[in-house]
Length: 330
Image 1 (cartoon, one colour):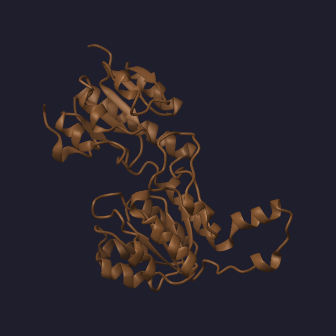
Image 2 (tube, rainbow, N blue to C red):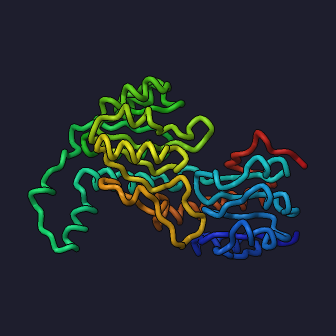
Image 3 (cartoon, rainbow, N blue to C red):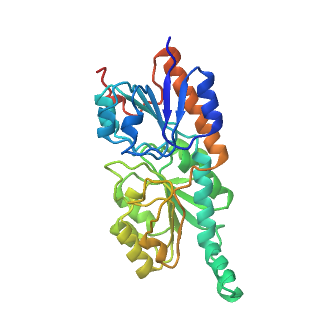
């Protein structure tokens, strides 16, 4: 049996590279590839592993040997899954492996918004001591938060908010009353009306849903209009969920405080010159789409990638498939 040809077109954990090589795969690690350089690199490749590298339909259609694309993470909107499926190429992901890491960042943002940690650091660096100003904080115990999306990440966020003594509301398509009781949270109906009614009474909201046609622009002008003045907004999921102009206006007009890890038009490059108008707004904290980027999470993801590839090699079977509905045998 010829060796499995695997291309990793992103930065990847050494343990994952070693695990794939232990399977007998021929592994090429090319972390700087992009949509322009990826096509030539895919010649003869059977398995492609990516994190943030975009894999558009044009790239997929020219990859004659490709059988499996593995997204080393949970979200997969950087891959044209429909084009892959039409070409008989399975797309698999690694759900839940980075849930704790993303929830930790979201919780860190919540604390930082309340205590204005970045602003305090900036003041100290500027040589200013302002204990009077920075002693103003709400505190989290007894406050309320709405968690939008109760998948693996949202559930981890719920656990952390409960540990801080917060009252948690949650909305999710799949959230049942039994699960809500077990988590000690208050579920709300899966409607926009219920969402906006709850936004009007909570101190904070944290968004943890995938980018789909139903969720694009979920956080729009009506969403932010419904929030209380001075409330906290956190998005560590996908930039497409947020109307950034509407968020900016709400920050200015209602004093909302926001923390974002993802942006609507963020670059696909790992390092480049880029800016967002959100970064210039007072009360807005930003990070670099690094929610899943902890050593613990990446080790877990690497192990899952190896398991997916091993199953394919040994059983000619795809697991964690996200494009099964459009996958053909072509």
